[in-house]
Length: 607
Image (cartoon, rainbow, N blue to C red; front, side, top):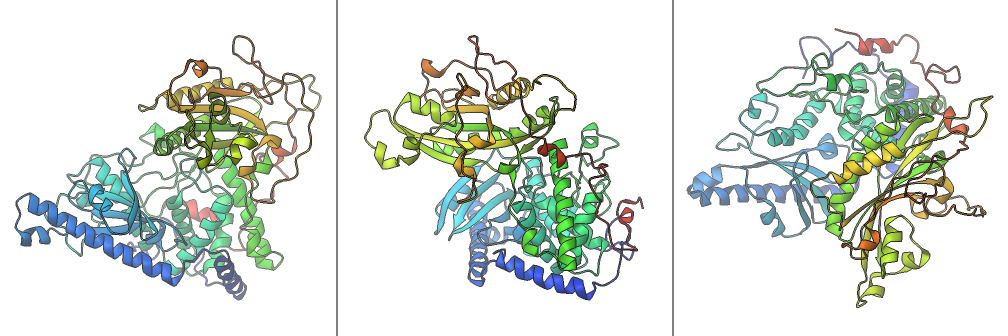
């Protein structure tokens, strides 16, 4: 959507030159590599997606008609009421891959749709998530995962040619419906604000795969989510309107590494609108001023898509921009291949110490909600850890590791809830406990935070102390404040572990180095936990496990005092972990540069 100016975006382009022959060559090899990496779906799956969307569209219209007739409308009037679906997310942007879900918005009168979907032929795993920030219904239809959000507009009929980009549609609808409409409105606006949609899609497909492989693709954990990555790529496309994907990807890493945060990334100027709602404005709102890497949505009401970023995740993301720039530079000159850009992250090899956060229940459906609640609070733990002396950063991993263990005793339940799963329990199957009294499953989801410890300063004498009892205690209190928390059915454990004690399930087959046999010292076994664990084998109340102990307070192994508290311990940090996160001004880091004649400062200049 071009404004009066001859360019898209809030500043003029850095360069309007077309890509050179070498950039065209590397674009061809980039697309070949993306196909090799399996980022494109087959024609058959694409056809299935289209059929599923067509069936969902027909179901929405049928639903609206039925509701209208129940309310006394004639059949003709009920049919005319319409109902329409819109897609958003990676599918709408055209960068979805095999097995990706379809984010779908149903614009309908506000009624109960979930029960009708359950009866829909081919629909499985139908589940409502009404308490989500944007309420959704998740389902799988003919094997295609689909997330359905609902919005009711203040219209008597929903016309077939309805466009959601009209801000006036937001009048007289509730706040949740405004949020539901946001995903589709933002996706549409992004596509309208890039000079070449195909170049944008090819470039975003690359950046999305890179961010996923490097484990920095997760809004909930303080990194960037899908819409934020899309807006960053769109901004680079605006700055190089005639470039092709290889050149866009190269400039992306350089400019993002050099970006003057907290200068916001904008695809268009922020606009006011018809509602009495908050629009992102750091001059007006202190919370907006605190955003470290603001990327602002291009639709009304403008919001920050990256408000979850912390000091640690900003450092990690910036380092990844630097790494990406170095590799793409080598690709351009022919000394590296694109596959190196997509090398898997080294999170579980990077640190000597980790925090392990284990959420557990005895019920599969409850576990989804409980583990989701715990995960959504981990960012708060990271922010508190950032204030601990001697910690350079706290690095959250972007996903949890799910496991089902079949236990036959209280002791086994307690061990599993603390992350201690013996070989016997690990090998046990569901059928092995059938018919056994008191036996049952324990569902666990385990999250990890890597701890980069400051190296010991030259000349310092004696052991240092690292006390993280306050952040971990506050975190367990925070998750237990969830309104649906039940001590008798839900467990939460926080403990510190060395890298050598990481479980095998965090590594790919063959990835883990053989473990060295370590001598066990007296009193150094498994008491470095904060057991807020489920209370019995069926996750029911039992006095044997109801005593609350203090969370982990130290690194490495801690032993409990008789009163349950744990003293801070000496640490021997790995000096190498500090190097990757030295201040950006360090002489050891050479800043990547744009080609001669291109000036990145143009991107952040005030117009």
